Image (cartoon, rainbow, N blue to C red; front, side, top):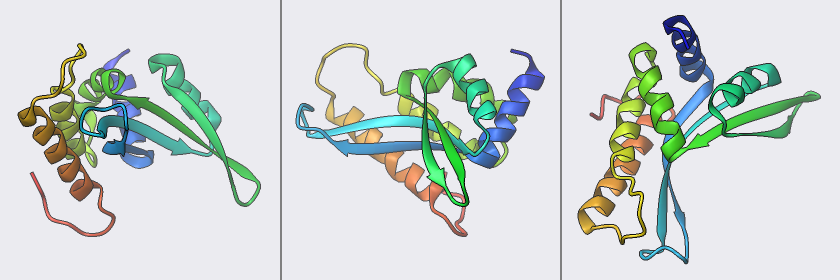
Length: 144
Protein backbone atom coordinates (compact mmCIF):
# COMPACT_ATOMS: atom_id res chain seq x y z
CA UNK A 1 0.00 0.00 0.00
CA UNK A 2 1.16 3.52 -0.72
CA UNK A 3 1.51 6.34 1.80
CA UNK A 4 -1.55 7.92 0.18
CA UNK A 5 -3.53 4.72 0.80
CA UNK A 6 -2.48 4.65 4.47
CA UNK A 7 -3.35 8.34 4.88
CA UNK A 8 -6.78 7.75 3.31
CA UNK A 9 -7.50 4.76 5.54
CA UNK A 10 -6.30 6.70 8.62
CA UNK A 11 -8.82 9.42 7.80
CA UNK A 12 -11.56 6.81 7.72
CA UNK A 13 -10.42 5.39 11.08
CA UNK A 14 -10.26 8.91 12.57
CA UNK A 15 -13.78 9.69 11.39
CA UNK A 16 -15.64 6.39 11.38
CA UNK A 17 -13.48 4.04 13.44
CA UNK A 18 -12.78 2.95 16.95
CA UNK A 19 -9.59 1.64 18.53
CA UNK A 20 -10.28 -0.06 21.83
CA UNK A 21 -9.03 -2.45 24.48
CA UNK A 22 -11.83 -4.53 25.91
CA UNK A 23 -12.28 -6.99 28.72
CA UNK A 24 -14.62 -9.95 28.80
CA UNK A 25 -15.31 -12.56 31.42
CA UNK A 26 -14.12 -15.99 30.34
CA UNK A 27 -14.34 -19.07 32.48
CA UNK A 28 -11.51 -20.79 30.56
CA UNK A 29 -9.10 -17.95 31.35
CA UNK A 30 -6.89 -18.43 34.43
CA UNK A 31 -8.08 -15.12 35.93
CA UNK A 32 -11.54 -15.31 34.41
CA UNK A 33 -10.81 -12.23 32.28
CA UNK A 34 -9.71 -11.99 28.66
CA UNK A 35 -8.40 -8.73 27.14
CA UNK A 36 -8.45 -7.92 23.45
CA UNK A 37 -7.42 -4.97 21.31
CA UNK A 38 -9.87 -4.21 18.54
CA UNK A 39 -9.89 -1.92 15.53
CA UNK A 40 -13.35 -1.37 14.07
CA UNK A 41 -15.13 0.85 11.58
CA UNK A 42 -18.85 1.48 11.13
CA UNK A 43 -20.46 2.92 8.03
CA UNK A 44 -23.52 2.52 5.84
CA UNK A 45 -21.36 2.00 2.72
CA UNK A 46 -20.47 -1.67 2.32
CA UNK A 47 -17.82 -0.84 -0.28
CA UNK A 48 -15.81 0.97 2.40
CA UNK A 49 -15.91 -2.07 4.70
CA UNK A 50 -14.92 -4.30 1.80
CA UNK A 51 -11.77 -2.21 1.20
CA UNK A 52 -10.62 -2.92 4.76
CA UNK A 53 -11.67 -6.57 4.60
CA UNK A 54 -9.85 -7.17 1.30
CA UNK A 55 -6.62 -5.60 2.55
CA UNK A 56 -6.58 -6.76 6.17
CA UNK A 57 -9.00 -9.64 6.70
CA UNK A 58 -11.16 -9.41 9.78
CA UNK A 59 -14.90 -9.70 9.59
CA UNK A 60 -17.90 -7.64 8.52
CA UNK A 61 -21.24 -7.69 10.31
CA UNK A 62 -24.49 -5.91 9.49
CA UNK A 63 -27.25 -4.31 11.55
CA UNK A 64 -30.37 -2.52 10.37
CA UNK A 65 -30.11 1.26 10.66
CA UNK A 66 -33.23 3.39 10.21
CA UNK A 67 -34.47 4.65 7.86
CA UNK A 68 -34.10 1.53 5.74
CA UNK A 69 -30.32 1.39 5.48
CA UNK A 70 -27.95 -1.18 6.88
CA UNK A 71 -25.00 -0.29 9.09
CA UNK A 72 -21.88 -2.31 8.33
CA UNK A 73 -19.15 -3.00 10.88
CA UNK A 74 -15.64 -4.15 10.04
CA UNK A 75 -13.51 -5.48 12.89
CA UNK A 76 -10.09 -6.96 13.44
CA UNK A 77 -8.56 -7.93 16.78
CA UNK A 78 -5.23 -8.06 18.64
CA UNK A 79 -2.45 -9.66 16.54
CA UNK A 80 -4.13 -8.67 13.28
CA UNK A 81 -4.92 -5.15 14.52
CA UNK A 82 -1.40 -4.25 15.63
CA UNK A 83 0.37 -4.02 12.23
CA UNK A 84 -2.56 -2.07 10.78
CA UNK A 85 -2.52 0.39 13.67
CA UNK A 86 1.27 0.77 13.40
CA UNK A 87 0.98 1.66 9.71
CA UNK A 88 -1.91 4.07 10.30
CA UNK A 89 -0.18 5.79 13.22
CA UNK A 90 1.79 8.46 11.29
CA UNK A 91 -1.42 9.61 9.58
CA UNK A 92 -3.90 9.49 12.48
CA UNK A 93 -4.94 12.80 13.99
CA UNK A 94 -7.96 12.13 16.21
CA UNK A 95 -7.16 8.60 17.34
CA UNK A 96 -3.36 8.86 17.63
CA UNK A 97 -3.38 8.46 21.44
CA UNK A 98 -5.64 5.41 21.18
CA UNK A 99 -3.22 3.94 18.64
CA UNK A 100 -0.30 4.36 21.05
CA UNK A 101 -2.23 2.62 23.83
CA UNK A 102 -3.26 -0.19 21.46
CA UNK A 103 0.36 -0.76 20.46
CA UNK A 104 1.36 -0.72 24.12
CA UNK A 105 -1.32 -3.33 24.82
CA UNK A 106 -0.23 -5.51 21.88
CA UNK A 107 3.28 -5.69 23.33
CA UNK A 108 1.74 -7.77 26.15
CA UNK A 109 0.42 -10.43 23.78
CA UNK A 110 1.92 -13.86 24.28
CA UNK A 111 2.20 -16.51 21.63
CA UNK A 112 2.26 -19.43 24.01
CA UNK A 113 -0.04 -20.98 26.57
CA UNK A 114 1.81 -19.69 29.60
CA UNK A 115 -0.13 -18.02 32.39
CA UNK A 116 0.10 -14.22 32.29
CA UNK A 117 2.38 -12.71 34.88
CA UNK A 118 0.83 -10.30 37.37
CA UNK A 119 2.87 -7.52 35.78
CA UNK A 120 1.50 -8.29 32.30
CA UNK A 121 -2.06 -8.60 33.57
CA UNK A 122 -1.78 -5.24 35.34
CA UNK A 123 -0.36 -3.64 32.20
CA UNK A 124 -3.33 -4.93 30.20
CA UNK A 125 -5.71 -3.57 32.81
CA UNK A 126 -3.95 -0.19 32.69
CA UNK A 127 -4.20 -0.10 28.89
CA UNK A 128 -7.92 -0.87 29.11
CA UNK A 129 -8.43 1.93 31.65
CA UNK A 130 -6.46 4.42 29.53
CA UNK A 131 -8.45 3.45 26.46
CA UNK A 132 -11.74 3.91 28.32
CA UNK A 133 -10.66 7.43 29.25
CA UNK A 134 -9.57 8.22 25.71
CA UNK A 135 -12.76 6.84 24.18
CA UNK A 136 -15.06 8.56 26.68
CA UNK A 137 -17.61 10.59 24.79
CA UNK A 138 -17.48 14.22 25.72
CA UNK A 139 -14.76 16.68 26.54
CA UNK A 140 -11.70 15.28 28.32
CA UNK A 141 -8.12 16.27 28.87
CA UNK A 142 -5.07 14.48 27.54
CA UNK A 143 -4.65 11.30 29.64
CA UNK A 144 -1.26 10.17 28.40
